[in-house]
Amino acid sequence: MSMIEKDLGSGLPPASDANLLERLFKLSARNTNVKTEILAGVTSFLTMSYIIFVNPIILADAGIPKEAALAATIYASVFCTLLMALWANFPVAVAPGMGLNAFFAYTVVLGQGLSWQTALGAVFISGIVFLILTVTGVRQKIVDGVPDVLKSAIGVGIGLFIAFIGLKNAELVVANEATFVGLGSITSQGPLLALFGLIAAALLMAKRVKGALLISILGTSALAMIIGFIAYPKAVSDVVSLSLPSMSETFLAMDIMGAIKYGIISVIFSFTIVELFDNLATLIGLSRKAGLTDKNGKIENLDRALQADAVGTMASAAFGSTALNAYVENATGISEGGRTGLTALTTAVLFFLSLIFAPLIYFIPSVATAPILILVGALMLSEIKHISFEDFTDVIPVFLTIVLMPLTFSIAQGLAFGFISYTLLKLLTGKHHQIHWIMYFVSAAFIINFIMGGH
Image (tube, rainbow, N blue to C red):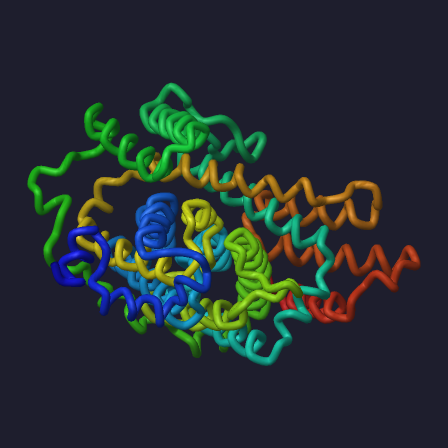
């Protein structure tokens, strides 16, 4: 029997292909193999594939056509995940960031009244800024200069913001003239469906079922069809399409000059700040989990991974989607043994194949994706364990950061109040030695934006 026949019979790639994969991804050096990497890639895809349906629905609220938003979401994820695989050799998949997409839709477009084209221009500019900061090494200095308590507060605040949007989309929280917000009619079909999806997703996650969030979305949508809450597909072509979805309505539609003319310092600043902290923290955590650190704690190709994300964010804006982030859900694939870019390559291929299910987006109601926003927000609450509540000059900035993100419906406002209050309180209490020079710069930028009428 030939070597190729043996390889095929064992379910492994032919020897020549295996050698190519070995050269590309250094499998043996990271103590892994093709089968393990592919399994890890499939696992990562299942746990983060919910973004395929959640992101387009959020972007649709900003006015972006659903089909184009779905296509842009998938193409951006595929493009940047391939960069992670082939350029950085990281077992990490990337997709439009939760929190960043909410900031884009609800703060920038709906809150500040920008067109989605101008907002995409801001995303593109933030990608350029992120790339410059990464290449020059300033990125690390900025991250080092922000106190750990604020880094954790940012994560918690964004989590509450996302959860609040989920509760709103589920109609569990509604506007109330007397109290601003109130409980919705929980016996109505929409809220009941959302509660069903929330319980189902939480139960599946508790039982560690792979693809729990995706199963919840599809299950809730199916139930919505059964009870007549939404229409159901009448033909196979309503669910599966052999032609790729078009993003012609969003491709290169970004208005860069419009973003510059608007002078949205805080918008671009907020995109960049959130990208910096969220991405760096996630990549470092995942890299350590995958054992990609050397004896000095240095992570191989971390700069390449961050550069890939910056380039990916620019590409995402060009396609018609929001800033990208490495997903913490990659931890599931790493737990299955993923150690190289082959894991990410597998996930990218599966994202691309999911394009054939693009028509399904029209049969996914917001009440089916709302529970996912609530659960993602709940998971982000874990960052609170890293916050110390002993120093009052830390407690107040942390509190303002966390509470003002959902209450002002703006991540940027929460960031602004957190940074400014931290700097002022430390100065006024004689603790100026605890303030990194970066904090002065960031706080001054937010104050200037307020004076200039920024919201």
